[in-house]
Length: 592
Image (cartoon, rainbow, N blue to C red; front, top):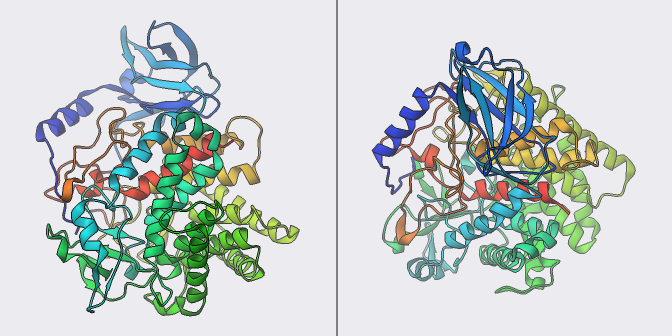
């Protein structure tokens, strides 16, 4: 269980939930903004008696209350698993592109209901939010005097040896530890953390440089990415593996920090060597990609490339030794694919080409008839709480360089099947919010659900899935541009644009709790969380979000708590992968 330092004003919680329960009609909408040329949807909820007569909605100008657009409501929908007795209508105003500030308006039985205000503008989300995401990472730097002194000579668990692991980003608003990954012992749940954040910034700097220049943050984006790359280089051991975790033990004494491997309940071990799936592949990818910039941080571009090559050579020989169960699975495939692809792009060498091709073929072989990936060599569907879109993103990056027609066709086929499955599993039940669903193995049977199962290989870990949503939005756009290209909007089909937009809108307030999970934007933000050394919640950080019902082993139902006797971190804590995937998603929306 994660220990956190928090401030949770109970009166805020009571007021918020009282308003939510008592409101007869609610307009759930992205409380920040929509891209002019992208998908735009919202959801209306209430009791059937009051909503039965409504057929239309209006889009009104915030300043003048002038009616700018009128649209129809969808047929009524329900989500009995979440809120029995409520009825929902989806509304779509994607065709409206006029820039400005707007609200959605409804007239019901002589009473007017209006939504939160939102902006419509070209590349609105990238313009509004990327500077704050950069602010968040800058504030998450592990650069306080206590951290720098302790991490310059930090002890390896079970040893007297010390290493210099200064830098990187603290993991969360309640956790000043630093991770390449964690949950390694669970084998199928390892998250990509510091290297993912670095690669996401590199991706933004390369994909939307003109927009970032207009916003005055291109140099800041590059410098923050270089800062991440510097930590990755420092984390490369003399032997050639990356150190996985700098753990604080949630102890105020910085001298307690150690380089560790982690098991359940914060049990520490000396298994701190990163396998491909435990941050190793992503670390290689981040270093190889940034080496092409020919820019120096604390290390030179050549040192970034040399480190990536050395880590790759080491893992090619030793990866199975570092996998906790001694077997590779889908996580190794997509992480190694991304690492090999970036080295291929950086060097043009066949050794990296051949490994990338092999890993792409592995992902193709893991595709089930239903359209989801198989995570192991048997029957476990691939699901992931934060990186669900990464197999598709890795394949799409590989397709940037692959020139063999047959291999390209095979990889594109895998991407298409994965995206088709994501749309199908999400839409095969009543789902007004369009919340991304998934398939998972539960008690020996494959089951579909909104949220990850709480009974899983970790034995304890489940939390809000905003990173998963943003990763799937990224996959829909990046992959959709390749397999369902369309010149309008975000460059792909309307279903994929809508799917992507709904995941991002959920994070920004279009959810049943009207909570904007990006701090200092919209309303009903999470209560401020305080951590050690002056760290805590920051503007641009994204909290974990909504989960299945606490106590439901299969993740069914719905839950969201801002106070839970110390366990509220599952919903309220900011976490660096959320903002990393969100950055990738809005980058894909704004891609030049």
